[in-house]
Image (cartoon, rainbow, N blue to C red):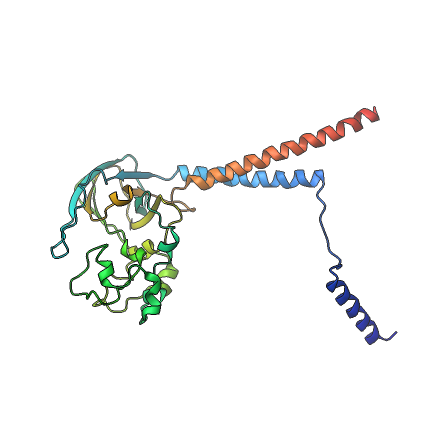
Length: 320
């Protein structure tokens, strides 16, 4: 048989096997010993990672001040009047020095940013600074025009009701707009920067201003970019700024411009001052999850070890 004929025959055999689904395959058959080894490795990995994450998380210094109960209720005036937000203050004690950088967060509770209608209510084309038609902003419903936006927040009177709201959509319309001023124990204002708080990919590709004369807010503001990344859970923290200097122990005062109402969704809001580690901010859930999975794998491991011991015991008795 020639080489060409052999190759044709091999190809025909392969195609027949492929069509009939009788191709050779390797299927691992777990044994008691291999199962014990797998669960021993998994339990070790999960427990080690869990312990490391918990230890790192416990080293984070974190101070939270809930202030929605300290500040007066926000009563919005009529649209044809000027809105003067309330200013309130709160104090808290830093018990140990916090090394730079120190991060400033705001925390909201009972705010469901993961609702499908809310998440899709934005225009990617508009946020990138391109000209838009109605089809480009149709996903922004119910906030498409400035007349729609004025039902949710105050915007400049020079922006016409019939123009497209820029930016449009529910996410942008619900932008968190409380502001903070932090003062150290000596009464000096602490500089809180909004630089480098958004993702680099967001800053470079996703957000670009079109024309500030037709926009009610800047989409290149990093606090806006942080807000636009919707949270998966109803209770969340978002980065508001960073302090690039050491925060020493003492009594600090927060001056809050109280703009953002939380009564309508029965929520709370808090000011948070925190350090971070190699894994980010405080997050006990991840470390605890690893520990729980490690313990489960260890329990399964012990079950298989006990089973192996039971199997070996009759053999040892027979040998005697």
